Length: 272
Image (cartoon, rainbow, N blue to C red; front, side, top):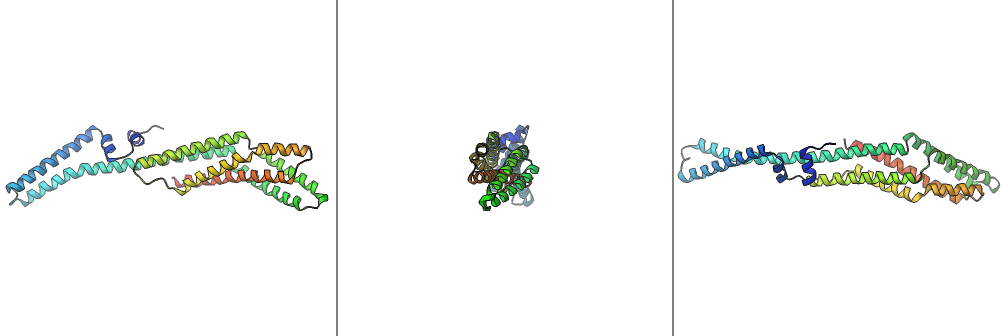
């Protein structure tokens, strides 16, 4: 996305009255200097007139000279301050726009990992599996074996619907780093503009959700746990503890993905 001259200045130098003067261009600088020269000349003329008594019988003329001198000094500084405010708010708008684009791209990437339809399906499947686990855990010894096989079957269906493998870890890490870089860059640009820091609760919620998701994904090792469950099932050595550990971690990853999706939607609305 091409940047304007003023945006580039804001990115590299920050926004200040000095930067506003440098960015004004030679034509405006010459106009400002002409105003200051005229103001200085009128001020000197007014002081000389006071000393020499030129204005004693000319109240209108002295008022005109003094007002003109004040205008010649005030107009350039007012224009510089106005330009400073314009550049500062432009820097903020550009920073927020960049975040908005990253939010949209992140939402698309999240949909590629897990669509909203799949999210609903997995939540329903998880609920059924936990209910089956509770029934198996409370079943009498004679029925427990069949019940546990049912739980294992539900876990197999979960894995068939969505398999979080090592590629998921790398994609989540990449999304997290891109978002953090964009968020930090936007914060720096806004701080350089001399504006209040980027304290947006919904944007900070995205940060928290990314941290929670990364913690859940990086510690889950779901692929390894599922492979171990599959091996134990073939050898009839599967335990309810192993199944519970897998289900809890699987549900946590799905929940964290859902929370991030909701946070991205809320933050996208907040930046419009």
